[in-house]
Length: 401
Image (cartoon, rainbow, N blue to C red; front, side, top):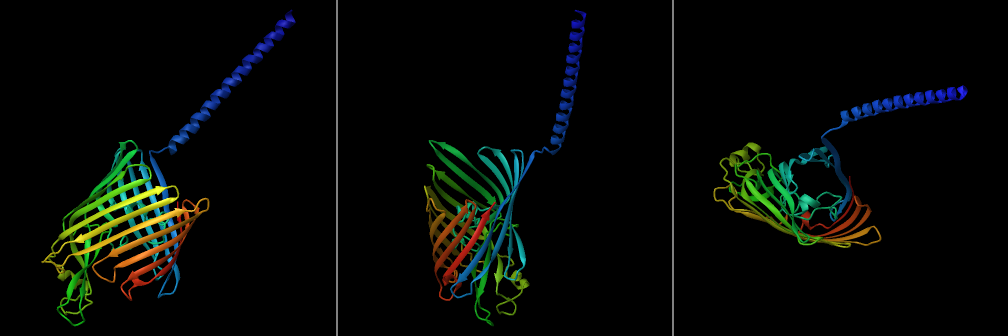
């Protein structure tokens, strides 16, 4: 009996010892968890950093020129977000010019303040909300053809970017309908005028040559431009938009002029003297656009018109208009990775050498949704002898990340 009791005592002591070891292990584990959590807290942040962007590589062979590889583009896009309150967004464009030199440009940089689920305040240099192409389609891995439609690039009918404040967002309208909107105020564009005449003449005239609507960093005339876009999505797959802008703009740059000696090809000081006291003039933009996706079909179109009013006191008294429209159809040949594209564009400008009517036929191969190889041919009709009249074959490889 005594021996049995001693054995039970030893078993009880062993259980107590095991429980003590288990408790010590739990304490040690809790200490390690607390240490790991402490280290994790050191790396926790209210900020989120994200890198996106795209790159492209091109080949072009024009009718009256030798084919060449070139037009490399690397466009990193940076996002720095603080909680659900603020985001900094910026895109750089890094290219190589014909001389092999690297050039860097700031496409846009904005600070986005999220006011609520339906409204964001945007400040900085932002892509123009006029129409759809510039703000939604211009990246090469999204654009279904290697080039922008004539009139929707630089010195065209459609504004590229703006510097100012923008309020944008989207709202549900019920029954599956949605609307999106963007309204802005900005510095507005600047106008380029060009002298036309013969060397040695003193009575040459100036004509408006282009609109520089690329997010100017200064307001030369002190007059702001107001504009925006309203989009309606009546049912899934269809969006219809209307855009507009109005304000003032001023001629800020002259080409081919020497005021004092009266011949073309002067200095920057000559141009500044000619522009002294240059008045502002009316600037108006109007546009409409649509986009419809159904199964493998993507159909879209856009119209935009920019108008500069006449001004008797200006170096270039007459007004001018830039007008362009395009319609584009793309179809994915499922289950293959091939996609066919057809686009028609008609661009009207003040000078015949800039006007262009273009048909563009393309065939794409989609390695993935963000990796696309494009082959396309342009059928161009422009002023005889001008580059706008040259047909061209183009190839492009684009990658979005």
